[in-house]
Length: 121
Length: 104
Image (cartoon, rainbow over all chains, first blue to last red; front, side):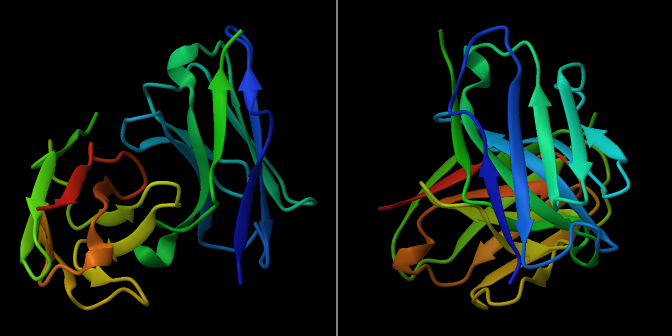
């Protein structure tokens, strides 16, 4: 059974870069038709799509975050990652990684448990 | 950029009620619309994909409809475990702002 697990620092200082990794287990990140995404939820707010990546490295970013977001994939480790630069307190959120299925019209069908990242000095 | 607007933002209902949540896209998105259920401390759960297809394992009391710009999620008979926040999502990208379903 496919599982996703987020990992990374729980505390990041303002103006620094937030870096997270999502490890995929129970299946291959290189499977055709599946993309991999990051979604966040600030405290008390709704879900926000950050971006999506294919195993080939093709990326799609939320226009509102595009200038600060970089995603990459490491197929040898079955991982993909998120870098969010120049963070502020407004970037404090629970970050989820998820699988996007082409078979399900691009829906995110499998999610990680989420990891809280706090931006504070 | 496409915007997704849900209504209502919050809703109070009782066990056994029929509930409908709407989602409107700022431009046509065909049937590229998904619905998720989100409970505190848990990962979001996919309920409906492609506007009206029920995800495997999801109870049949959940249904979705619509195409173009207007979509609905209906819960035919609310169960205690259904009280949560519901989000629509344009396939491949953005989410609506959410609808919090609370117990009356």
